[in-house]
Length: 302
Image 1 (cartoon, rainbow, N blue to C red):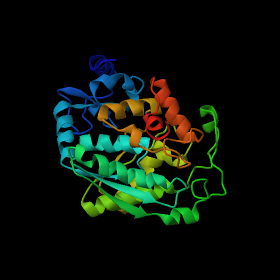
Image 2: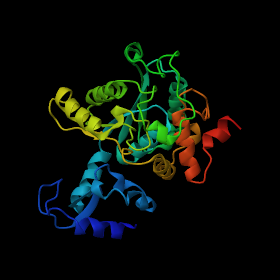
Image 3: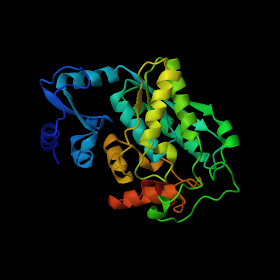
Image 4: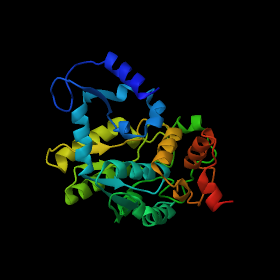
């Protein structure tokens, strides 16, 4: 579906004539996605066909001004160096004027992700058009309090599950409260830096049933952080991958220049992936659906 057809559908179903940005009557309508995905390259328009509910109609000049405003703003990003968060890193560098990445050490089984995340930033930092900084944050209380196969060696990581089986139950890799800690930390970082935006790579489609990757959790945290950290001021909480499957996340990332061979997703900490954990299976399946082999395999295994 091209942009013209998308606009026709949206305008035909326009619920009201008032711009949600300006509060005024719309004179020159334009489509805007609530997750800012209208900023994606036009060749990815087909990704949006099943996401009409995510559209809103705004005044065209208001949309343009909003993007101009974002380009002057900074954003704090929860960054693991994995497939999802690295895609969000590249996305954020297109929209914002500066990006500050927080990398979390919570004593995770796959602690190698910390080294891979720092390596990715150090390797590609100069390729971004905006300043990208990072800091490593000690989150060991998560490990002390959360029982998970990512925080306890004696708890086994699930192996060779089908994608259908992954969705039947919350797996042992779920770390209770992890995203609550992470979102609080990036909000603190944003507040300290004078930012009003935070971003993270959570996803509600191709995920392992984690409760803290759901839209309602992100929305509730946004409201809590606005009240408790920013004293009631509105903040932007961006989860641009929320309604994308893994295949389309990769498509987006390839357009944005993500070097997926240097991202790490494996729960067992194997460079290039073990091929057996849920994360590896979801990742490799998505690349295969695109007619590709995961480039990390060629770099680290073959």
